[in-house]
Length: 323
Ligand code: UT7
Image (cartoon, rainbow, N blue to C red; front, side, top):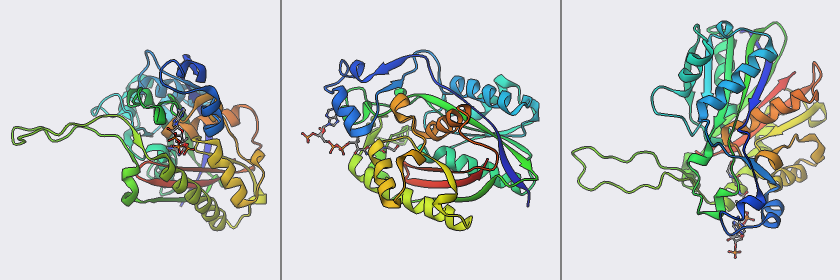
């Protein structure tokens, strides 16, 4: 088995910033409620760019930071719940635009845990030797599937993309990984696709195509699995929380992070948080946060970092990484 390391990161979000004040003109809400219940101050909402375009920009930035050329990439794994289309995959759209001609490309679906799952898949391909250099992307234009009349959900989400380059290495990089799913709780976070509609179907089902969520159930699930995931990757890597420089969590709600801090008896400063500026960007959130933390120079070579996420499915997972 080979070792696998993150050798570059990039991110991109639409330039259109929507504040909580702006949201109060769309639905019956206010800055105080959104800030105190979630920690979110503003989010980016796309006016022109679809998921592939956000992904392409994040991918170019990640390649630049890794000092690699598109043709060096032999695998593209892209996590999204908001693809441009069913076919081609968003990963193939990225390949075409950046000219990553040597890559095998596919999308994966794991909602907000998408980037963790995608990293996990890419790292297995590299560890076994089938691929050498992977571009892993988490990208969403959630504004396409948000019900702009539902104040329970529309204030929470935002658009954006993040990317990481994984490469075969002689040094340790991704040290331990853990993923899990609980399909029995899937009903708590849903977004319909196309229902049955062939000539055999007498009455077509009416679907909403909008995200619907039982916030309280997801909150409970999130706090439970985040603690479990962090403990699991620490145990597998034979590390303790004292060895960890930063935890990069899925950026959904400040109160979830505070709860996890309390449970693990750690300081909030250990968590890198940017949800105040982006809201919840689902599959993109950990990727964007990882890139921002890296760009801010927060990681030194050898630092240990945990990435941890949860989301629709329901799904959850984590990685313990050595920078
Ligand atoms: O990426 C994974 C996806 N999701 C999550 O991680 C979400 C996890 N859950 C949460 O973050 C929280 O449950 C929410 C932020 C979604 C909601 O917070 P909460 O403290 O659980 O609020 P709630 O749903 O219990 O609602 C409390 C009140 C309700 O009013 P009443 O019934 O008490 O009169 C809501 O109608 O707040 C009301 N409310 C709002 N008020 C102003 C709900 N949304 C809004 C809003 N503005 N945007």
